[in-house]
Length: 157
Image 1: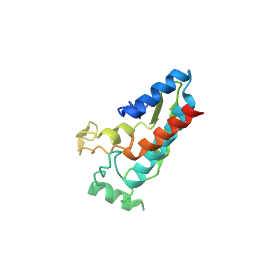
Image 2: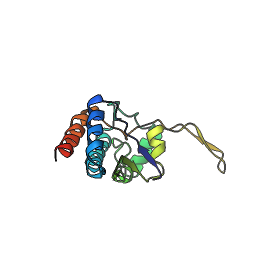
Image 3: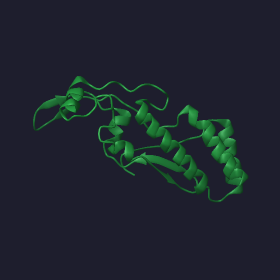
C-alpha cells in the first residue's frame, strides 16, 4: 500500500492479554482485526472532521497563501485536509489473520501525516515553505474501550 499507514502495537497490558488469549484459541483472527480496522478507520475520519491528531493536538492552521487559494476556488478555509475529501475518503482497513493495516493509497498522504521541509522547484527556481505535519492516522485514547470490547466479543463467540 503506497501513501501512509499505521502499525498498531498493543502497549496496553489488557489489550495484549486479550490478543494473546485470542491467538491461543484461534488460528485466523481476521474477523477480530476487521472489526478493529473499522473502529480505527471511523476514528481517523473523526480526526479529519475535528482537525486534530489522534492524540488530540489541533492541526496547524493553514498558511495565508493556502487560505487565499481556497477562497478563490470557493472552498472553506476551515476545512483543513478535506478540500475535496479525497484523502479523507481514501482511508481503509486491510484485515489479515494476524494483523490489521489502516492506511491510504493517496501519494501525498505522507506529506500531511509527517510534514515536509523547505522544497525547491528546479524548473521555476522557486522555493516553497515547509508543510507542517498534520497527523491523521493513529489510535485515539477513546478508541481503546471499543477495541477491547471487540476483542472480548470475538473471544467469547
